[in-house]
Picture 1 (cartoon, helix red, strand yellow):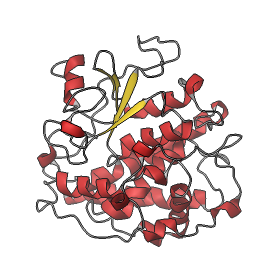
Picture 2: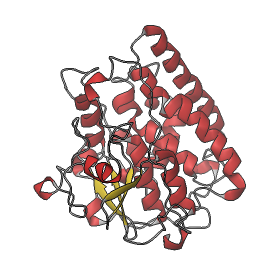
Picture 3: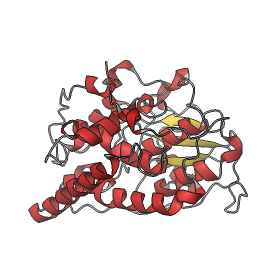
Picture 4: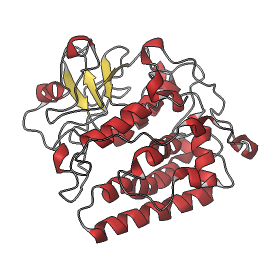
Length: 338
């Protein structure tokens, strides 16, 4: 999610930029960036669904001690994501006020704006990658030497073709589809995007009616990618992005699936509804010029029974659930269901 040109949303046709910086941090360091505990910092916003994938993956895999995390203010400005949640408005590890400073150390005049998630090389302060599609896959497959004991396999080799196929459909129609609907500038453009969102959601609901997870009987990267859109659906996409054919809470299968994931350690305990709502409603002034943040929806339902365990499945496969959230990374009370 980029902080570039916030006021333009709703006034120009939406097109998601490709990640400009596509270096990879790998076990063999083939791009010049070897996996190394403590060397890199993950910069995220809890408001951003793309960044939230990395937050969830990092927690499920137990990489907290190996990969530190910076959380940006959900209200960014045209200078980019800000570290105004930290003392003196500076990230305590990188020493910078804006994520753009790490981008500028890597390259000047780069296209695509300043986006999260971003991985920054701590010693040099330079951005390594903002490739949101690849970062989590590499955390699952290249960082294995630093995974916690009992970490799940989120991208199992024997299921990758199916996972990739599901993720491609989810990305096109759901993850990115809600943005194409919300930032549409013409009626036909909006209707086509919105129709595709709900057509895909219905198909996903059919798929999940007889199985607990999207691929196989364990959690995978595919579930993470769908969850980060579903958890934002009623809070922001239904109203703010006009994806209002029905609410997630009105779809029995998808609502139960989303609650199952939310109540799984590593998912809901990373979600900050306060950051999510304030970001979308206050930053996208092109489609919400008043900046007023709605009071609803009621979040209590996220903690209600889901009964999805009756479908079987083993959330973490042969592994185990992650432990408690690190004290410095707990979501504040105003961002959690009561």
